[in-house]
Length: 99
Image 1 (cartoon, rainbow, N blue to C red):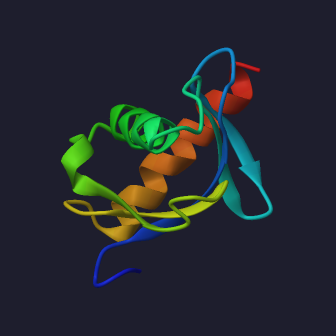
Image 2 (image 1 turned 30 degrees about the vertical axis):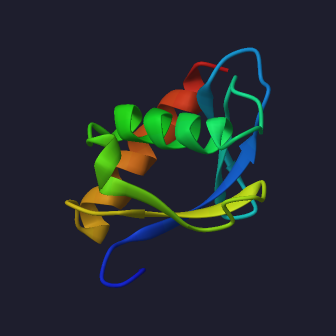
């Protein structure tokens, strides 16, 4: 939780061939983004991908820790913890089945 909003640890790999959620690693969500880690482009790509995967508006997500690191914490507004966990489980399951 971050200031009352559910938060999730994310491990980001920028400069990938395609942007996608890859699964989990060490208790964090593993995300690959095509954007390079320059001028905040990878951060914007992570937020955009996560919002699209979870059916949320990108403005309801914030990187609250790790903005210049591969390991980030993203807070989600407009969804409760149980709802976020359920959606994340679906996203991770889908990532596992798509290889």
